[in-house]
Length: 168
Image 1 (cartoon, one colour):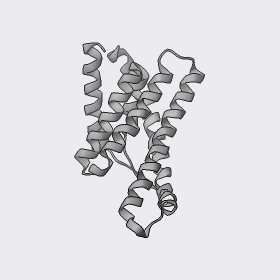
Image 2 (image 1 turned 30 degrees about the horizontal axis):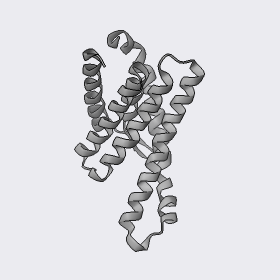
Image 3 (image 1 turned 90 degrees about the vertical axis):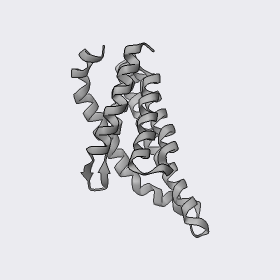
């Protein structure tokens, strides 16, 4: 990576953390943060490495600062993988391939958090909760995660065009 790309990546991570921490949008299923917007922007414009870095570090640091340390490593892996997938399918590819990449990255986030949430419910439930019950209970977070991906995608689309001139 070039120095300019590393600098832009660091700024994206910082801005993404601030926006995600401060701007929490209320929805019928809870609150949605804007963490996905930065992941999409980094991955779209700079590819899989930047998507991985912005996604993983933003997710990790956001959970650390927000007081959710049990989620930090899950977020590092899930959001990092999401950013890598989106970036891998989006750099200089046909529109159909980019759409598939965005869907695959989004699905990775939604599925990853369902698994991680189910696992955390299961281990904190002790012998009282079966893994099947934990997996069913984990489904309650899926609508909020779908909403978060959609909101992040829309915000990234709106911000991406003006940013294109600045970040190139």
